[in-house]
Image (cartoon, rainbow, N blue to C red; front, side, top):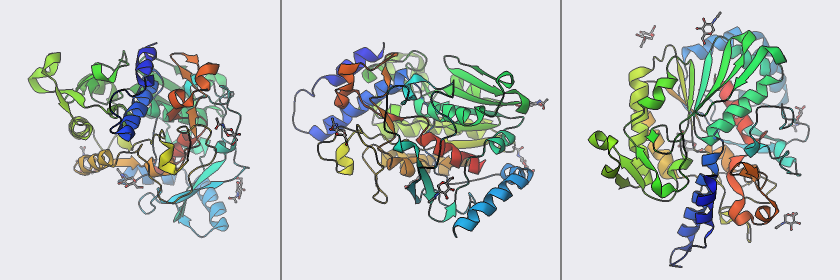
Amino acid sequence: MSIAPSSSGTMKPPRGRPLLPIIIAIVCAFAILVLLYTETITFLSPTSIFKIKSCSRKNNVKKSNDKTAENNVDESLVDDRFEFDPEECNVANGKWVFNRSIKPLYSDISCPYLDRQVSCVKNGRLDSDYRHWEWQPEDCTLPRFNQELALKKLRDKRLLFVGDSLQRGQWQSLVCMVESIIPEDKKSMKRGRSHSVFKAKEYNATIEFYWAPFLVESNSDERIIGDPKQRILKVDSVSKHAKHWLGVDILVFNTYVWWMSGLRIKSLWGSFSNGEEGYEELEAPVAYRIGLKTWANWVDSTVNPNKTRVFFTTMSPTHTRSEDWNRKGGLKCFNETKPVMKKKHWGTGSDKRIMSVVNSVVGKMKVPITFLNVTQISEYRIDAHSSIYTESGGRLLNKEERADPMHYADCIHWCLPGVPDTWNQIFLAHL
Ligand SMILES: *[C@@H]1O[C@H](CO)[C@@H](O)[C@H](O)[C@H]1NC(C)=O
Ligand SMILES: *[C@@H]1O[C@H](CO)[C@@H](O)[C@H](O)[C@H]1NC(C)=O
Ligand SMILES: *[C@@H]1O[C@H](CO)[C@@H](O)[C@H](O)[C@H]1NC(C)=O
Ligand SMILES: *[C@@H]1O[C@H](CO)[C@@H](O)[C@H](O)[C@H]1NC(C)=O
Ligand SMILES: *[C@@H]1O[C@H](CO)[C@@H](O)[C@H](O)[C@H]1NC(C)=O
């Protein structure tokens, strides 16, 4: 319902100046996206990995020796890429390969935990090719996702995804990828407004999600404000959220799309943090840098890297400008059924300024952060968004709305099963 006011705003034809139609289009697209996101789920995002690993990884690898060894042998017979090693292999460098015999580990019918927002098949999507693409890094083989191995790595641990609806997607994807091997009475799910917990009882493991779309505090966290103009961020405050992140063994963060409304960000800090009038409007990358630094300071001062692994999922690309992939007469990502094949394709939905802020802020942190750099691999996947097979304001798009993809197609979120499964495949390989 909070979606209605905002989407009607975005639906108005850009009035005024024909001056910068492209910019206007981008702003509108983002506004719509942000609206969509807000009411819906936010899950994980991209998956390329970058950095640091930890002693715990090696231990885990040893423990699960038997299984991984078998897998690796199989794969090494097939090609000459080396075995996956998170420190050696740049996962982002590779290609999507179509393989009809690849079956997702779940469907939106079989997994009871998926939100309607991402349940594309249930919502009427008929084409299925988007579910049969496999990411192949150029220099190494990425191990297939192994459900048992995943649960073993999570044994006696709390895993918490923190962020927006894309992060929520990654969380649901991971839950659905493992839940089918757990008997009914050995698992549970508790959904909360901000905090949701899936338990795998026999493994004494939890896979959790915490909603904090900006990571830092804002007036649009619990009760989402549809109109981005009304949102105010406390760019120097994170403790209200962060107290829920304590004692977790594996933390996975993201934040991106909510900063990209196209507007300047109303930012509060210091002694103004209690007075709404004291805000300053900052360009998104500037506000983002301050907000991310606030998060980084919290991590550096609070997280014990000997106990807790910290991951950061990079931007999940949005695909709202079909010009980006030279589709003449295209309607955003609507009706796309194949990934972009052009190497290094990069569209306007992934803001390089934000990526560089992430690199610079995280690069100066004390606590090692492992990037799930999913941006490049997901940039290719114009075919995998929920598009018109989604909901708005708590109900499925109706016929008229579906006939108007320019306004209603969701080219931010991903169908599940889908691209976030690959993010989790990469995540597991780094655990
Ligand atoms: C496609 O996937 C199947 C099943 O996992 C595998 O056996 C086969 O080698 C794959 N084909 C290619 C061309 O990668
Ligand atoms: C279950 O996992 C928690 C960490 O999430 C740990 O503190 C606790 O000791 C574990 N319980 C058992 C019985 O191993
Ligand atoms: C982490 O472990 C290392 C090596 O055992 C130790 O030197 C260091 O003090 C520990 N750090 C913290 C924050 O406990
Ligand atoms: C969508 O794609 C199908 C098949 O490629 C085509 O027949 C149809 O006209 C397209 N729909 C629109 C609205 O472009
Ligand atoms: C993620 O990967 C892209 C290219 O694939 C690169 O430009 C970017 O710097 C990487 N970002 C991070 C934070 O590692």
